[in-house]
Image (cartoon, rainbow, N blue to C red; front, top):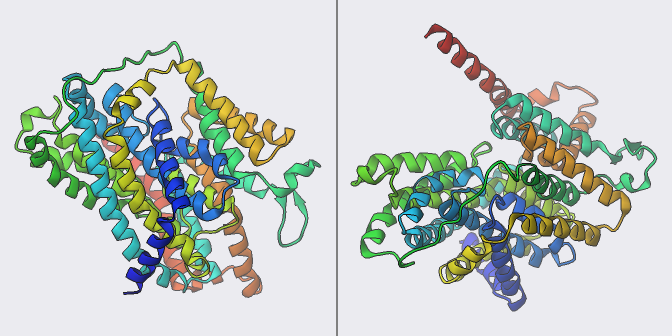
Amino acid sequence: MDTFAALAHGMAIAVQPMNLLYALIGVFLGTAVGVLPGIGPALTVALLLPVTYKLDPGGSLIMFAGIYYGGMYGGSTTAILINTPGESASMATALEGNKMAKAGRGGPALATSAIGSFVAGTIATIGLAFLSPYLVDIAVRFGPEDYFALMCVAFVTVSATFGDSPIRGLTSLFIGLTLGLIGIDKLTGQARLAFGVPELLDGVEVTTLAVGLFAVGEALYVASRRHHSEEKIEAIKGSLWMTREDWKRSWKPWLRGTLFGFPIGALPAGGAEIPTFLSYSAERRLTKYPDQFGKGAIEGVAGPEAANNASAAGTLVPLLTLGLPTSATAAMMLAGFQQYGLNPGPLLFAERPDLVWGLIASLFIANTMLLVLNLPLVGLWVKLLAIPTPWLYAGILVFATMGTIAAKPSVVELSMLAGFGVLGFLMRRFDFPIAPVVVGLILGPIAESQLRRALAISLGDPMTLLQSPISATLLVIALIALIAPFILKGLGRFKANED
């Protein structure tokens, strides 16, 4: 009953005129930027992070939620129309969606994607609202050593699951952890790694790092690949609307996709890639039209896209209740919280229930707005796809620079933006995952303070990390997650040699 009351209170906050406007702006911006080729939800949120810098926290986070959901939906549009997934989670959607577009059925593909996103997002947000209080009850029992162990799980799972190589993921993580050391040590007051530059005493701004790595780095990478491949835009032919047969074939995949997406998205190493491909495989096995798969089966769009959006709501469960980002976009959301001095977790539910429940309630509104906006505006999104690549990425660079100047006007900050942009380009060029860098910068200082607190309470005894059952269990999970990729790779090589 408490959840219903909290949700009703949150809805009363979310439907205030200014908050509705923030949600509408967020949804529109998120979809408009997310629909552009090669720009996924993480880059969308990173690029628009400085826009919300001067807003009040409540309105800003509601806009963020709209940007997040809009960006998630926008990636499917590029996947369907030009076979360019905005992120890896949209790859499964592209398999059948682009075939439908080439057959002149881009309209129904976009429609089932939009409606499936709405259905899955709504069901998953209900799950978020009712599951979060139980996780918060568990989280408040955590001591400092338990939180440190939880951060270790986050570090290992994020670095091991992003990208193809665990070593590269861990390297990216250590770059982020090193950047997190810059600034004044909160315990001793000593400057660390500031090199005599006064602007570095406050530490590295998450906004600057995120925009540099994602937006500037992506622009430089696209510029370097400019003449390697040309994208062909497919026009939508025929009707936008789904037929009765399309509806009949879509509604079960929407529900099944939600069942795949939400629970897996809520896991520390879940992400959206696993449930989308599981959903695609399930639909391929369960379909009554197996001959259409590979040629444009609507089930192959409906299921993965529902799983994709349900996993987006799922990632908010560990983010809001434990402060753990389980995807690149969730890491950007965490950066959004931190720019207002807010740390997601159980204390946030107790200290700022209006903000948390207003945010959760706004997800329902953002979902509805997405459906209302995207079905009539497909023609507009198609025109956005026609923006020449040089203009598009030049605009991104200008937008990123102006946003950074607005957030923190400083020559040092702009130099750092350029430096992080070059770093982002090099990481893409040599296939290093970018998300662990942001996670390391955000969670590194938190993990350090919790470790030092645990050691201070135990008078310097490191065994305190193993004496708590929760801490010991989490450290074992982190160790298994760290070793497992290497063992699996070794077994794969062993079998290959045997064959």
